[in-house]
Image: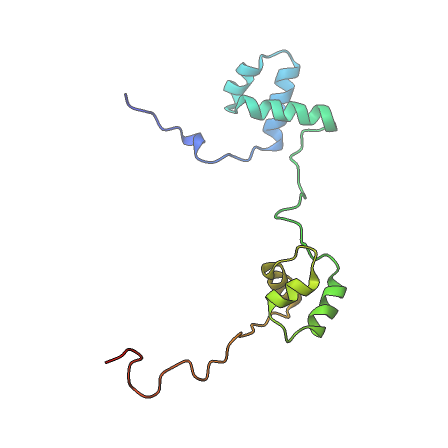
Length: 140
């Protein structure tokens, strides 16, 4: 049995406000939902969501201006900037422990970058990191 590929199954398409309006008007004029979906080539769930949104808000306009991504754990930016300047000599991990409130090293890193204060600290000295004698460290 060979399966047929559906072109509309790859990505959801953004629908125009005009299409949404026509589909809802067709349902309100007495057309069956399944017929409206076939007529406008939309899914039944999409039509139901439009109708539900209109019932709740009075309009079927797409939702906009919603928050994208997670909320920042650090919200008081002036306080954090003063904290970062005071503890600028510490590593981000040490700063996270001092700040508390479940803040991680990554949260500190992101906040420093947002304020333009990002800097990297080395935990070890790198002067003796290479062998200058020319011999290997293994026993010969």
